[in-house]
Length: 459
Image: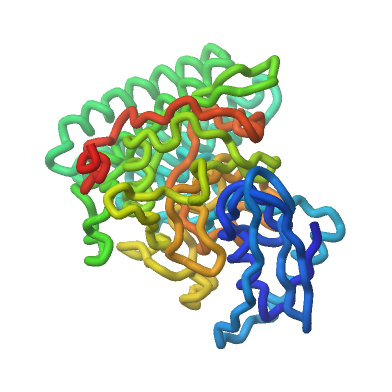
């Protein structure tokens, strides 16, 4: 698998590869795309314009598309990235193939309280979800940050780590006491009682964590930390009062997830003596991707993914969603045509997503996305290479953080629609392989946030 990318066609090639025919076919190292699932692909180069090749992986084949000029000039930085991508194909930089479809977003996007979260990129999926909530309450963020910092404190060997943990806990307890009234005032009226109850549990839990530290019980810290952060996340969700914006008119009748939902995906693992089956908990974020997440939940309720095989698993991504037969996407029984959804990207600082164009196409080169490809197990939509609005049913989870896809500077961000993260058992995604079977996908909470469910109409 090899390809050389010209500066002028870097974006075209990479977009197409992530998007290319969605599932199965491997896409070249430098690009990402959806792919169908049959056969082999070939790379061709003519007049400095490169086509990317894909190699076989599943049932289908990625077909090269004609390069298309968009009438835009490209920066030297983009050319440099293009060269880096091309060199990577030769020197063995980890592959960014997308044997099925791909979806990506721009760099990490966090709330207005950037001073609270400066430093290394956030890679924890639950932290990313907390910061992606549409709230602006500095007091609760100041409680959240030192509790999250406990993770770094625990990287210190032995009991010495507990000294740093103690400082983290004291800071969180202090700011909670000082800012509790501001936190309570930020709760949505309809959720205030529940939010206050969680705050009481948070206060009691901090006292328990302080006692754990004093007892020098290092092993008990991480579990209690996660419990407290779950309380924090619950309080923050109770600050969201209804759905914060209107979905554009042309999409408002599609299945929409107006909030969040939790999904359990049970996978039967073949030929692995250490793992027979695994249940992955996935949190879907409809606040930042209502159309994309709603489409997925609707398909889950149709049992679309039940019994489907994993169709790509190469260490870089895990991908599925290409149904049996010639169709590469979900065919809506009511129309007998593929159901597609628009590209949907929430930019940090904006109140509603942008639709139908990548951030690069919009000229938003430095924009950050609310749902970045920072976490192991980031979940996104595949789409056709040159069609921004062609996503349907093919999904993938990003595994590898390579030289070309570092957190906070991911070339996938802003180009494809992230709509959730695997929050439990995500490490086992790396053990999945082509042919493993998704036994079931079930919504375990948040189904009441789904508006316009088409599965009910279909019966």
